[in-house]
Amino acid sequence: MLISGGCHCRNIAFVLSWEPEPTEISARACTCQFCTKHGAVWTSCPRGQLRVTLREPSLVSLYSFETRTAQFHICSQCGVVPLVTSRIEDHLYAVVNVNALENLDISLPRRTSAAFQKESEQERLSRRTRHWIAHVDYAQLESISRGTNQ
Image 1 (cartoon, rainbow, N blue to C red):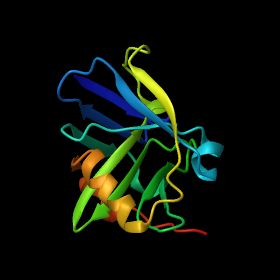
Image 2 (image 1 turned 135 degrees about the horizontal axis):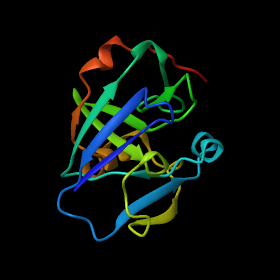
Image 3 (image 1 turned 60 degrees about the vertical axis):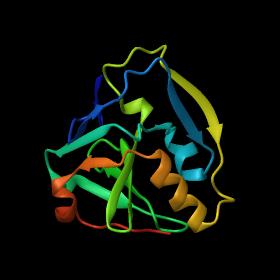
């Protein structure tokens, strides 16, 4: 199944190839302050493939906090956070925001609350390698200005 998504102004867009065809999509509402304030709900398909495209890379900000092991991709034009990436042992992993999906049957996502704040950094990275999207095509990643706060 191909699922498209992106920010409101389409500056950050993506297509997720979900394998195998889902009967349900796990959607995790992270309880950290950043995700709560942005209303972000994350999903991933470890066997899927994600293709991210940027219309204007200079309008994308990357934000990291706490362990600084993940980067939230924020469109500075419309303010939407459609995806998060994490580079682990020189491999890029990602999750996408369910609220940024565009052509998805609304009955598929099953939202649950998720708290990751008590994980050690190693536990967090290990979970990401098991559960995040492992095939990410984001060729323009290196050209984005790196914004890190907190």
